[in-house]
Picture 1: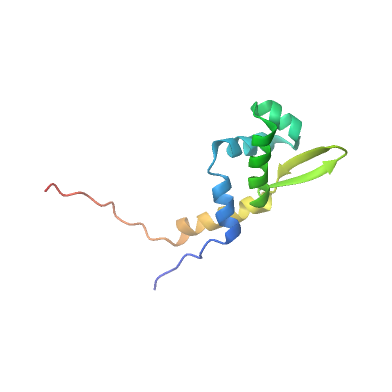
Picture 2 (picture 1 turned 180 degrees about the vertical axis):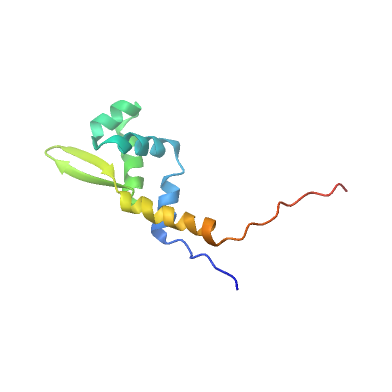
Length: 108
């Protein structure tokens, strides 16, 4: 009997793509401790507003971060349920994938 892995959803694909960039990972790390406004993120990262906006948009589209507006500021926080979706997808590899022997190269 062979176990098959489920195909990643579009949201999972977007999540892994979002996590593939070092600047977006830096945003995630900053948000691990607490909710931050855009101004705090920009100051901590030392990048231009347009660059930060692009990366935050990617993280929001992947539903890895949530945004809420308070007055003129937008505050960002992690959307932990989406991280659980990614974690569960990866857990399937650990749980159901057979461990394959390492291939060795033959000298020709």
